Image (tube, rainbow, N blue to C red; front, side):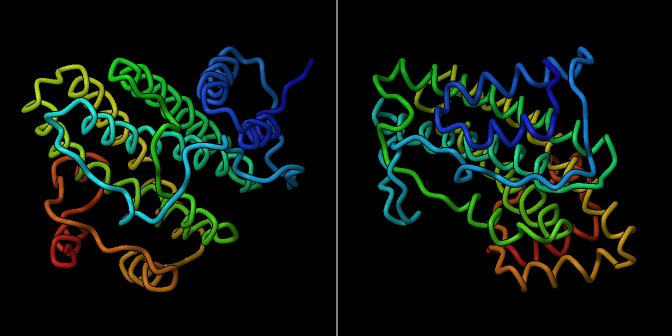
Length: 268
């Protein structure tokens, strides 16, 4: 059976079971690297099911409705890990959506975002496995949906999607990870720290991919990224960055010194 990469990405985007989805995206990436997939970059795909596919739980609530607990308690660490696992599950969907939604782009775009989907799938698996050691599982707690909301806002604007999902919302994960690691380390949870080390390493690469394709889109469209980015942030109501910024990780992900200076000035 011939498998077409973008159609399969859409199929997996519609898959509601997170465990199945997390493994399937890794299998799809392996099949791509083995030369077992075809690619039709020009075809416009139409979903036949609601996207993204989601399980009945977790129940989605406003961000402010999620109560925090002390990370020194197993239940408190479970709350944090569950929140991160939900972000990683959303990130699988975001990467798959980029692959299936945007047609007519270079091959490297599709392979980049398929790799991102596979790595997000691994992150989800690692977090879920650790959650289970704390007598919790994905779906047992509430979660919020900020990442997918921006995905919907930018569904018909490729340049905005690259600007505002990977290099804005996902870049916030670069800032948030070190403080989270310190909390887990203080609570004696070495495994959580180790998992977050892996996630931070990979997420630098994911934000770099977003940076690369945003600048590619700016060049294609003949716009100046220095003025376009703040305009997109205002148009699509992107959140402001939060202090402290992880300047080292952001620099590795391709942010320029001028960009970092502006972000620091805007950060709350």
